[in-house]
Image 1 (tube, chains in turn cyan, blue):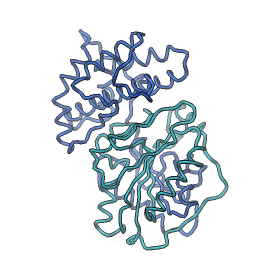
Image 2 (cartoon, rainbow over the protein chains, first blue to last red):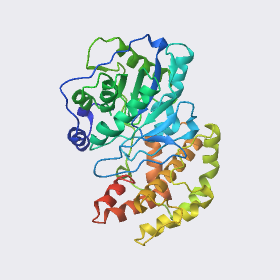
Image 3 (spheres, one colour):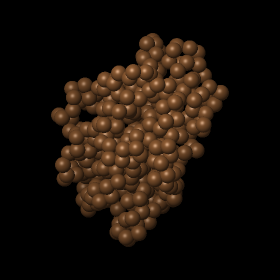
Image 4 (cartoon, rainbow over the protein chains, first blue to last red):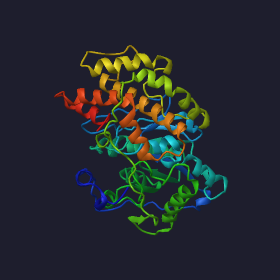
Length: 160
Length: 231
């Protein structure tokens, strides 16, 4: 997005006031194999899900901290967005899913052998969470453990 | 959402993340973050620009070379100005006769179908779960609700409250209109799209009326939904 100093006063205040976690340290797990042998998964906060899955639900208090599983074999036509925010331009993803969830792009990187392979599943959360605690203690670790079970080496995280 | 990077990395999985708000990314201190100077909704740059999307991914993959973190790097391309125009910024074009939103849907259907055909069956329509041949009923339900009546639909899933169901119906109507317009005018710019929708369509007028009714309520849950319809 444009840097905060270029936003209108009201948008800037809302971005500044957004509750962020402010830890002192950073967890660090470097990739222990060449990228060309690594298995990649995508995780997004764009509120995406399969067409026949349950849409995300808006919640004024904390937000919807659930997640949806999207098989990496899914086609763009299978995927819908139910993100609660209208603070972003929804027409971009209507035109091209890859602008938010770069499924075609990572597949191309696997085909050209830059990346090793695609994970079985991608995962979507919905951002704009005012209370990330249930995510940090519940659904986040749950998805981490699924990614481990699916032998994922590298996760590419995209917002909207 | 960079907090997820921390959770995964703590579990031993390597992550790279894109960030739209640099100031938030600085606070969260996720391991490897690429700040992208694009508007919200455009994380990978531009729709249908595979080269730009690959440059973004490539810049994010480059962060894997770093030996310690947190790493917060700026994607070295020009900022893209905001293209989103909200309802409140658009003045309605006075129409000589107010159209019926249901007739408007019928008028746009051929364009919408062309969009779906041109995009391999892909459409953002589908949240309310009601087939389009029954949308006249959806519109009557929304009109009735906007007039302050106690409206509901049999198709509403049990776990979805009426205001949230209205949100899904509205999102479907918006997507239908936007996709129809993009099929009709393939080179339309985003600001033109939003100005057309909020300024000239009968469906947008209905959405404004729905938001108005919800905003007039004292219930914060209703005001919250209203804020996601039009603002």
